[in-house]
Length: 304
Image (tube, rainbow, N blue to C red):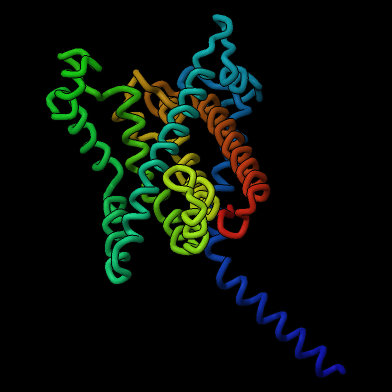
């Protein structure tokens, strides 16, 4: 009996060591680059700011009052508008990414199995280049002298002397493009497991087009779609590079507002408070996503 117990204890000990060896580096990375910086920012957020924007004593709640829009001049809705704009841009970019991903995913699935990995590689390959470089490319494509802008001029969407960038349209385009692979890959993983007998059954019942997709295809790809939504919406909400280059002052988002508090107009406690609030919104979004995933039955694939 004691030998069996000893063997069980040894096996449990080896399992703990394997778990530590596999998850330890990831946990160390998260602690070093996420938890510790977040804790530091949380502390800074409760300091006052001196004339140069540096955190100093005494402790104060003024940075959070600034986030809410209160200042010496009264209340202003600017920060709330920026938060809402960030949510709107992230939401639209996520919807556009999903709308583009579905046709691409099923196009790849319609190709021979041997070239499918290559096609996926072509989709992921642009994301290996620097995001700044890709965003500058879109700045050229949407500038005043670009062909896309000429079409917009002909349709009277923008005045002749202006381009599609900077502006909200350019930000949405840049966000959707930059995070498109993060939607396609999980959606492809779900679509690859599609039970085509259900699609055939729908066709036998004279369903076609939108009805066939909605009732036979969409439910089966929902776990991948939910994963893609979280992979696109969360980083797009706090993105800095795309709004800064393609939006400027005309489409300011929360990421740019936070960066400005540490660079152009320094106010570290205010910037830290903005960061904490953004992390809270992100955490609430993840919790809501988890609850929605469980209700829709996609918990096996769409996990956080």
